[in-house]
Amino acid sequence: MTRVVLATAYGGPEVLTVVDQPVGDPGPGQARVEVRAAGVNPADWKSYTGAFGTDPAALPKRLGFEVSGVVTAVGPGVALAVGDEVIGFRVSGGYAAELVVPASALVPKPASLGWEQAAGLMLTGATAVHALTATGVGEGDTVLVHGAAGGVGLMAVQLAALRGARVIGTVGGGGAELVRRFGAGTVRYGDGLADRVRGLAPDGVDAAVDLVGTDEAVDVSLELVADRQRIATIAAFGRAGSEGVRALGAGPGADPGTELRDAARPDLAEAAGAGRLEVVVAATFPLEEVAAAHRQGMAGHTHGKLVLLP
Ligand SMILES: NC(=O)c1ccc[n+]([C@@H]2O[C@H](COP(=O)([O-])OP(=O)(O)OC[C@H]3O[C@@H](n4cnc5c(N)ncnc54)[C@H](OP(=O)(O)O)[C@@H]3O)[C@@H](O)[C@H]2O)c1
Image (cartoon, rainbow, N blue to C red; front, side, top):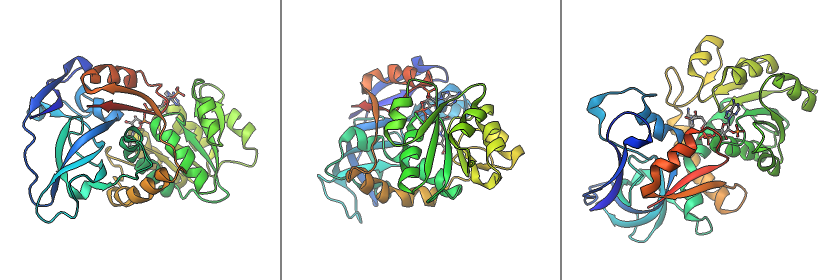
């Protein structure tokens, strides 16, 4: 038996509960992982708050797309060994003390990378890689990152800088210092945003990535970036369709980028292990306090990653 988090109904974090469930043995192509840390992402609470629908047949729901942990058993045909330290992404039901996953979801965890950082690396990192690749961000570009202090934002800021771009990040205040630590300029979002960005980038903005989904982020991107194919959003899927900008991820009409995101995993692990990419952990919570973790995330101003510790 192992402890797993379940959403037993649609609603707020009060629908979350921790129960014991059998974990099972890995079948062909699978491995069992003892979870050391599980990354928390907005998609986790969106899965039970109704943002992605309220199909009663989908209940109860397991949560969690990314973990770090240790292999405890392998099925036939799996080139991993018991004791291997791994990062799992994309997994299903990662909010657990132990789970069985496809071996294809596992990449080696660099020894130098902490469990919490490893658990928070992949979903945000792969999303940021997708956004920067889709908008062609490279050497000499100036890129505007909306929501720079968030989980995806801090990855996009660092990865854009590693590509040789100049980064301007929008922040609400509390995250400005953190974003600037990674070499970006910062501007407050809110009325007058476009003018503040122009003040920092008098020669113009080449690309923009919206990691928040507000009308303001879309409007300011359209105002400042000449080429709509160099604007991407991971959240404003409705606006993307009508404005002709790139929509990325699991939203309606969006490019899921599954292959690109999967392919990004070894490079992300290498960069984080080598210290070129930092996973900022905002807070950790015991698995039993998952509802508190989600309440903090849902408030919308987390700077870095929330991580659960089984
Ligand atoms: N499509 C995909 O593939 C994909 C993948 C991952 C995430 N997402 C989505 O992308 C969004 C961000 O995810 P995340 O993991 O980065 O979330 P997060 O860690 O909770 O960060 C959200 C950030 O948004 C900032 N923010 C809040 N209101 C803002 C506003 N009006 N303008 C600009 N920034 C604002 C907050 O910082 P301040 O303190 O500065 O306000 C906060 O740090 C979520 O909606 C998530 O569901 C989509």
